[in-house]
Length: 306
Length: 306
Image (cartoon, each protein chain N blue to C red):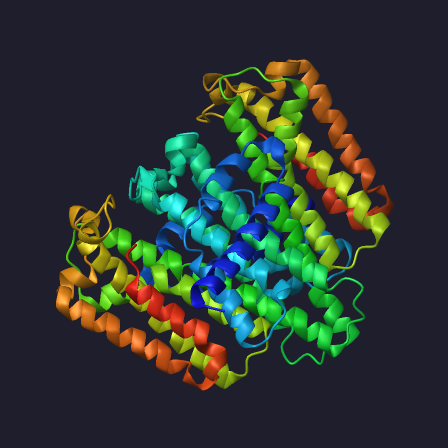
């Protein structure tokens, strides 16, 4: 199957699962459901959950063990975007060509919708752990499987917390309007964006029983992929208007944010992008054919236009 | 030991644990630590975690199994207050006599500090589950204990989500400036306040191995306690200035919020308060002497002045 066909398959699995879980389990009466769904079902690349599913396939794992965790990460990613767009934060009116959550539902509901998505991510993961322990006789295998999922949840929780995504967001917030040093820029992105790109890879690896060597290789892959993703974002912010019509670009410069381009320049940034993409691909060479989707994904992200 | 001495003991355990976990584990560099600590360590009754500890003592449970869950609930409670106080929500400048979080740290950081506390609550609970599974040989007992903690976490996650606290907050938001019907007021408080009063009682009961009858009794106790807590709050909002000097009162009326007093009148509200307090106490009669702290706690909340 071609890369793009497989990507589409994964994407469809994610969309269907998210759709079923957001419409089935939520308490309709509370009136928050619509605001959560508006942002969660707004499409997007679904990069994070797709990474989980792809890693699951590397190990021949059972996708139903992985997908709640994959989608929980997408919920966390979505909540972070809703809160990031708020007037007190980035004050953005549009995301993916649609009005941002607070522009449609008001600030108060957007804050609560974000809170609810973060909370719901844990509900969904816990549901899965409890389901998989039902009727279990607690063999050492079944108990071990439960523990793997708890470890996966912990990887995700750490990645979205103060030592991960939120930590990066705070540095971002504190650096606005300032020129920051390269090491701080790197720290910021490693956490703000990178942590939630690493989490789906590593949580899926743990659930699917990766050994230490495999885990470490995937960690290197995900780290490099995260950096590549951010450098590319920064490049697109400068070159985006040339390549894709209608895309709002130069927003980093307008907000006086430090970026890879502002610190290293465009040419050097492109070199770095190419280098970390190579490193990502190199890290998973041991997986051979089984790692081909992950390899092509790195190239796809390198060449994307949006 | 007298009720107030025991309350103070519990409170000290909670303060110490919160203090150690907030100063030890957080990544200082991120700059969010101070904002989280400001609100989390601002004192208060610590009612929720104290309920957990008291239930643990009813069963002679091991407090170290319960305290991370008790304190996680306090973190969730604190995050909800930070977000509730935001300009887009209740727009409050003061809480417990101190400036609200966003008044000190700015709105952006207050949003992130709230997010971080919710996230950290799960990190802390997951840490405990993983710690208690270390070096375990997965006997059916050790596995059962892990599952009890997962169930406790799920109780807490549901209580703070859209079918609990957030669900109630949304109704609160949508009812502002409107006169609402009694059943909606009841629904709102059952979730907005009640859910996080029930969660510490039930999560602790599950961890400490309560049987079904005991669990149901405690559930009735906690439900009634939650209602009593809210009715008393509404009464204090009207009578507060007469009883405690300096307390800002009549804020519900100013915000045109429906309350037990605005719907049922003061006298009827006091009758209801007395009735639900009796029901709470009646529910735990079977625990006899072991339930005496919980009984006195209900009376303490009935008679409080703030």
